[in-house]
Image (cartoon, rainbow, N blue to C red; front, top):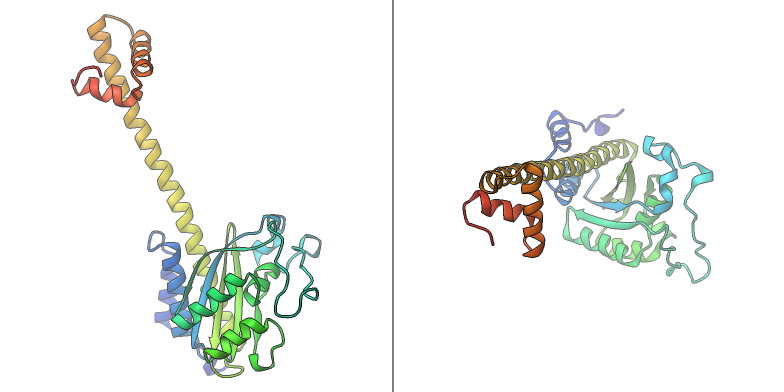
Length: 278
């Protein structure tokens, strides 16, 4: 490894580690931090853009991709031939295999526009990376014959090379694209650091999703426990007032709830709060 490739400083390593902290930011916030770290920390990278994707429905069978392995040829998502309508307007992908972007971020407004234009067209290098689950690099886009529309967008904004890296952390798929302003500015050492960034970023998004799901469940359980406690208190009050048992008190509460179109919990809160029956 040469000196120019030794770019993982202590400060950068600390910032990358912080990406995985649960609750630090939203999905879009994590993507912004990934692109910012890439543009600041990777030599030759003049800017970066990242996209979080919804997995195509047919991609779930490819379990090896979750381990970073090349796709199983027997499970590969079918590719659509590009010859039928010309090089600049490939036919759209079928809906059942079309990857859908959920969120995107870029380090610079020009790169955000490059990404948005490609996403709006529905085809280009980013889509190929998502479908193939392999990194893709162009050392000099002046000689690039693929994706002419996307290359034209990049050239107009001073980009001369790029590399896009995917990372799958089910159910989250994230791509990170690095852009350079000189040919061959992005070498293999840069790809390694990009892979580390995108892996940590996708882990952060996954952790945040899991944390949000767990927090939502905990809140719902807490609300259910509190509602049950209020209902039990209301039953006790009715048992004392009507001289009945718990089942009869609950049946009476249900009858009132249904006939007066009041939620059972709201009815219980009125009884416990001594507000009277509605």
